[in-house]
Amino acid sequence: MRSMQPETPSTARLDAETGVRRRPAALLCMAVVAVLLFAGFCALGTWQVYRRAWKLDLIARVDQRVHAPAMPAPERGRWPAVSTDTDEYRHVSLTGRYEYGKETLTQASTELGSGYWVITPLRRDDGSTVLVNRGFVPGDRRDRIAHPQPGEAVTVTGLLRITEPGGGFLRHNDPAANRWYSRDVQAIASARGLSDTAPYFVDAAAAPAAAPDTWPRGGMTVIAFHNSHLVYAITWYALALMVAGAAFYVVRDERRQRQPRAPRGR
Image 1 (cartoon, rainbow, N blue to C red):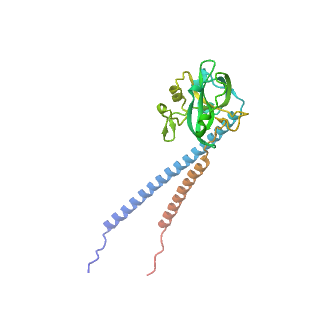
Image 2 (spheres, rainbow, N blue to C red):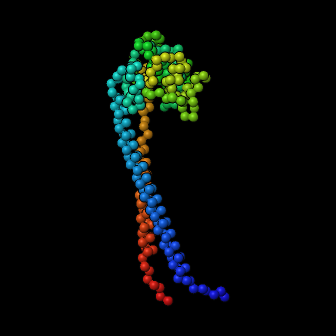
């Protein structure tokens, strides 16, 4: 039978000291991580609160622009200042002559189904050009696009939109093949040989007395803003509370373990 050697005082002291040193270090690391996580989640939640306030303000401003009386579309001198924040969805009007021979069809998906937006250049009296989205036409009706009043001056009212460069989702515009997936003003103007073109386009309003089978169909702009910031904020704050709860549980458990235990009877 193997003899049991008594533990020397120096060994017991070393083990005890080692245990005491390691445990506070681990607790300190856990505390630092918990504080960082709590602060990070709270910061993300607060950021989402500010983002929600900004989004609600944007929605209110856009709604005001859409329903305001039509104002003249920005002239050449104002083009550099046109931006999403200050001008997108502004109710505008402009006068000029359509150049139907330089029309462009870009793919579209609407409540009426799949088809195309009909983008027609409008040449203004000052020589500048504005691309006008005259509306939607189904794919099987593209040969029925109306071209009223060729060469005559027309006045267009609608919503100012910012150019959509590049293409659509996972699809790039191919000017050489005349395939368009977005309303890229610069690319369309270059492909059609247009000069002095505004950096925006206009979604034309619906014609008040248009026949049901008249194409293109205007006034189909969809204005929708994704606003889930409140849900995101609640999620981040909930995670922060979970971290705080876990830290409270660890602290409580540690205090229980440190309490002296009553000696057991033999």
